[in-house]
Length: 209
Image 1: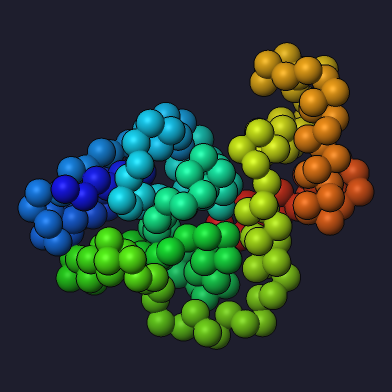
Image 2: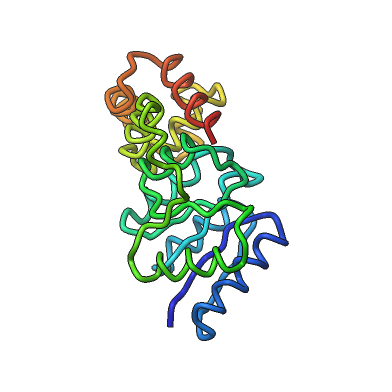
């Protein structure tokens, strides 16, 4: 039987998604969480057939949550659920590896159609995605962010919080040379040359979510 994960801190939306999933397959099993940390823990131990991820959770904003779950399970089928419906946001989510994008304004019937398509291995994107071709810079940033490993994402988050290498090494249980190696890889993948530019890149990335 299909297994899905709903990561959404809005009860009404989570309930609607659950109803839609059961309409697709009454035998479907569903886990619900309200934070990225909870989602991470479940995704590490369960190969879900579909993950429905709110773009804005209490412990993460923007596309960083998508990048983190993709780093844990690169082949996972993840669909973004969001109140943001701009073509640029949809395009960025798709570029980062989301197989679907379900606006929170969707009707139950639309949610059912989306979940059915995603479980069948199809992409599901709202109309208008083609109008986002002019957003190449944002899409490029999403693609670059998607190449970061989970360890690199955590190091990047730490430098955004102002932590120095020694503190990062302590917090993440890493050797300091390992932190430096991760930083070098982050700079290379993001096309930046220092910590400040990396921080600005992540802030720009999050701002689009």
